[in-house]
Length: 179
Picture (spheres, rainbow, N blue to C red):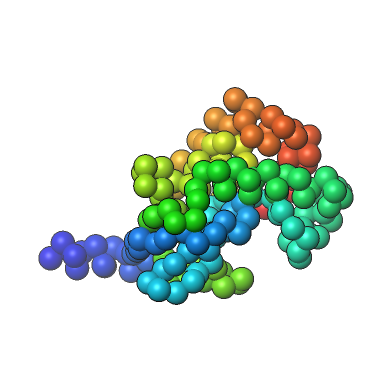
């Protein structure tokens, strides 16, 4: 009975049930994308609800350059710092827990998920709290995750962490142009 009520509530709310999967980290692609082994398949995972600067020339970097008026020479070091921080936070072989709609993919073929480390901390929230990423505010984001990301962003700003400390002007220019 309780399960059927939950399913009905999810259907009426327009939300899908959150799924979980245990995975092994294969690589950190950049400051907001991981490559994992998910049930024997290599999958790209986008850290849900946050965005980190780009660390290599790509189409999104060009968009960021146009929006911010900053050159690749100014923006790429932001992304490289964010990627290095994430690489120090987790390493290939680490076991992680993915939470989210694991069947849905974004326009780049990635699965969007809240990624939990073995110590129970969300990588998504940790990257924002450390000042190496900023939160996104999509309406489809679970309220709990959105609140945790917003609180982490406020904390990073108050304590001037990460890119807010090392490259404040450039990082703030990049943040202001993001949607």
